[in-house]
Length: 199
Image (cartoon, rainbow, N blue to C red):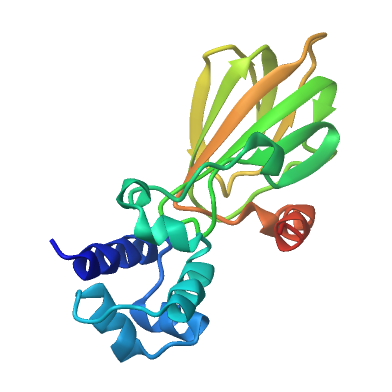
């Protein structure tokens, strides 16, 4: 396969990973849709300037577009770079990277007494799986209360008001998995702010 075809395939792969249409990527990168189509089909090559614009619009480095080993991933999200939602004695971290297409995952750390806030919250109407990774946690789901321990999980609709609290004397870690994504920033405006200020 020629270098032009390999480059075009990687551009298309990254574009699809980000859920962008060809027209949307072209507009963001400041290139024409016809040029981008020819590039993805291996019928045109990109100048250094165009490659930089396309890479920037995709949120990757130009080297990533030239390296065949990175076309299947959005890249590593370092723990220190995760957008964080501070809660009351707890923290909620975004694990999945934008744009979220099929699911979103959040990790949470709860100190003793930590919770998601004084009131239950809901967001969207997605299938949500809540998993306790370490320690013990209490899930308030509608009128029910569930005492959950390491390895326990529960599935529910994200539209049902829910609240998490660590009533134990030890730290706890949890995961929230939603499909499709619901955009929890609707329930927690601080998360939207954190995303908007991320470099």
